[in-house]
Amino acid sequence: TGMFTYDPGFLSTSACQSAITYIDGDKGELLYRGYPIEQLATNCDYLDTCFLLLKGDLPSATESADFHKLVAQHTMVNEQMQFFLRGFRRDAHPMAILTGLVGGMSAFYHDSTDINNPEHREIAAIRLIAKMPTLVAMAYKYKVGQPYMYPQNNLSYAGNFMRMMFGTPCEEYVVNPVIERALDRIFILHADHEQNASTSTVRLCASSGTNPFAAISAGVACLWGPAHGGANEACLNMLETIQAQGGVAKVGEFMEQVKDKSSGVKLMGFGHRVYKNYDPRAKLMQETCDEVLKELGLENDPLFKLAKALEKIALEDDYFVSRKLYPNVDFYSGIVQRAIGIPVNLFTGVFALARTVGWIAQLNEMIGDPEYKIGRPRQLFTGSERRDVKPR
Ligand code: CMC
Image (cartoon, rainbow, N blue to C red):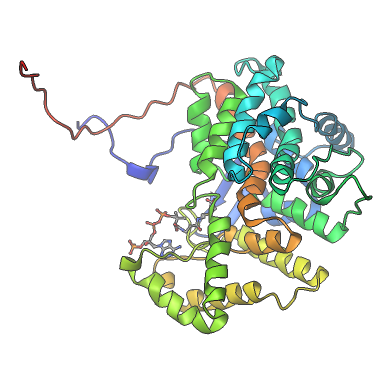
């Protein structure tokens, strides 16, 4: 038993070498390929950020135009996917549907399923990035009973997603540029985050040599959980519950519950395994939140006020200060998404859409690493010693 390090939750184990994303948790710094997230969120769009994560450098003007065009060419999904989708109950959770649809893509695109073939991986990457918005929007339209909207490729990546979500065939959909930019920024902020649970899941899954779509669907499944990508949904549910109980006036009472460990209540959207300072994404998300609420005339949104009140208390309260618990990206992203009109149970789907590029970049990096091996953790066995089955 002494041969292996015991490290539950991987608190002190590096499972890989990576050159993609760097986080300085104490400083609250996040870099994609060396570029600070603040600069990317201000000066680049999501697809340029995808190019950066996948290829290592920001695209030149020509490369950027080519990449945008290439992704646009792959936004449609095989028409048969609609029938697959129809097999789900209408009240299925969109993350259940998305896990299924993304995994199901391996059955449709046979020319991009060999993970060891770089060309297959390249085309799988483009397909996944291009088709995720279509799939997320289809899952939504199925739920609300409206016709699916085919992608319209003269729109931007975010604009196209908005139209597929909120447009109908009855009238022309006009993209609001403030919301479009906000959504694009949400995508950038969620694009990668080094070896988090879902990314590690994708790496482990892909290490067996399975096909890329299957590996990404494992990432979607992992992201669903409330301790990970599901935190934005859990955070909004928390805010709505407090609001129903009396809103800002009840914040103190709620915080007492959080601090009483026996209650099992957590302040969702707070705390992070790596950030022991303000999550830089949370700052940007708060700015975006301000912009979106202003644009939509929702400055007095009670949930936003509630979130700010919770944050204020938490940043001063010894329980949170001593444990270095700060808002993470999910604290404000739910409020923005809700204001845009995205239903609460689709928040994590939007996160999955945005994180897909990170999963693929990490998968590619792993497969391209000559030292890569199938992931195979060991264990400390705590069960019964050898014993014999008695004759019965
Ligand atoms: N509310 C109240 N107490 C908390 C919270 C919270 N949100 N987060 C951590 N703590 C406490 C925890 O109980 C522990 O206390 P003690 O030292 O007395 O036992 C201490 O802070 C350290 O927490 P931990 O659970 O050991 O830390 P971890 O690194 O294992 O967990 C986390 C990190 C993100 C899972 C956790 O902070 C959490 O559950 N937060 C709420 C869910 C959330 O917002 N998740 C999104 C994370 S960022 C985006 C993403 O990953 O998708």
